[in-house]
Image (tube, rainbow, N blue to C red; front, side):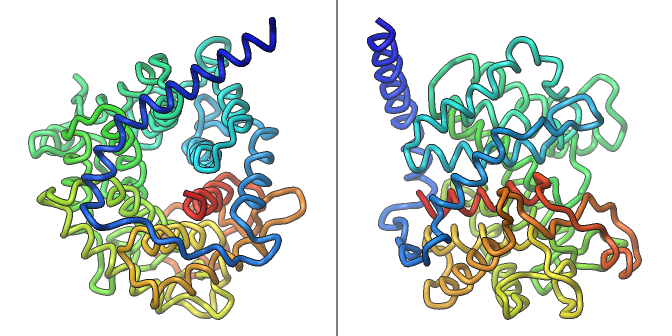
Length: 384
């Protein structure tokens, strides 16, 4: 009897995935346009460096890890990013066992651990909704949809206690959570993009694209990179990584007929050209991107590698110019993973400071989700 029940459950999951897959095809075709397909370019990786080997190792490491909490209260965005990476990777390689295990980690958030669900009042908290929406895209369980969509919706629903500045932003069509911090453009983009993918409501992706253009106009420098803040003229690696990954996520699903598409693509291409220039001989990028004397940092490097790999596979970047730098970055990153499956040389959380030495002196750790996540994104990008 147990075997019969398990078989029925498996068949239901296959049916659900086909159902949701049909819904998502429209957004994928719309974003890529006719005649533009994925490019298979990374099939010759050496033993020990394959996406499957690395993705499995880091996913298994994640499954036995404790929750990382924001303010000791709610699931932290860095854990969400890692969870998303493992889930996307598992889906790309059709690993039903891994998908089930990742779902088992999530299930208590509906019941005994529901107090860990983030509140909906900050970009770093609202982005949590991308995770249940991604689960919904795989299993079509409406509980995930009902949990996830309010995180996307409330990002544009002005609260009663909004400040005057937040009201001005909302009246201009931007999220009231807008801060003009460069990491916002991953946090806002990921939740709005996932909401668009599962609902096909264009408002989600268009408002994310409008916000991206606003951030680009305010923050991108002529060389394509981004200062940590307008008053802090340093090109911090992971800060730039959030922008690179955010543009990548947006361009993957933004319809090409969007009024914002070409503006975002131009900024993405400008940034990628600059990053290619600053990649070091090892294949990494430094903690301060343009400072050759600074140390190589893994989380930012992995985000840039994700943008490179995706760009080559989607046909946005010229294969001849970017395939080898992307491959070189991936191989270099794998060398920073220890036997336990922890990514090493990860910069800890870093607030802005107008002091170059501040960035040199930031502690480096192993196994932090800020580093685990983007390496899993790369494993996913190499697998789909």
